[in-house]
Amino acid sequence: MRAIKKLIPHIFLMAYLLVILYPFLFVLFSSVKVDNQSIATNPFGLPSTLVFDNYVYAWVSAKISTYFWNSLYIGVLSACLSILFAAMLAFAVTRMRYNRISAIIFQCILIGMLIPNNSLMLPIYGIMRQLDILNTHMALILPYVANAIPFTVIILAAFMRSLPGEIEEAAVIDGLRSGGLFARIILPLTVPAIVTVFIINFLGNWNEFLLANYFLSNDELRTLPVGMVGFRDAYNMNYAQMSAGIVFSVLPVLIIYAVLQEKIIEGVTAGSVKG
Image (tube, rainbow, N blue to C red; front, top):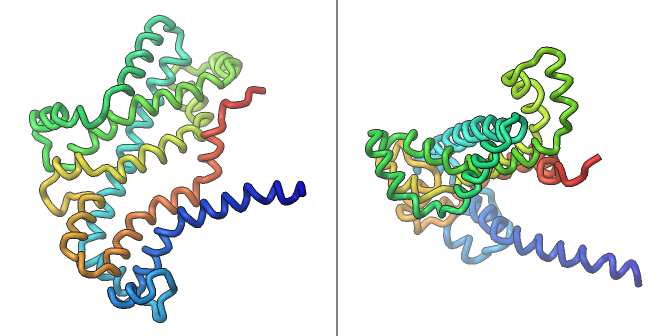
């Protein structure tokens, strides 16, 4: 009886996993089928013959490669810059001896978390126009970095507060100043939290559509979410090629989680237990 009770949660979790994977498996199987007819006759089964030409066509002819690399480098660069600025700010707020000023700055950061992103679209557009960087990738990188800083500071500050002060005292005795203490001691110890916020920021940048749709007009500069909308409108009669494009959009996320899953878990649970 006890074994059955232990088995029930696993059954529910497996059923939940199947529900989550069901749409992705449908897209994956559809991406290697011949045409719409083969998808309609056998929508959820394996194809009789694997057709990888759909991936080649989507990557080359439909410009998925251009959109893919645009999204990849914008997402990675924006996430790295936001982490760099946020880590320095979190270090100043949590580890430097300016208690009153640090408290005021941290409260301002919390207020920044309360402002809806969509409400800032028109002011951001005006700023980008005044800077004369509309229709360039910088028009996306700057808002992405600024938008990610409040959340990143809060996560990194919570992690840095859990680090023992004896480490800093020993480093100061060895002659390290603030810059060396941040770069050589605090930053390496904060890697689990950095990996976690990097993935969250990267996914937000990777999937962002609104700013990318309105701030970029040249097709060669578009990111993958915007490009996929045009791909859907142009090739909405060929669901196999559409599915191949969707697989390309999901692939980086799967790779990141597969490679960094241990760091993600470590970063999420870091600081929850103090020794």
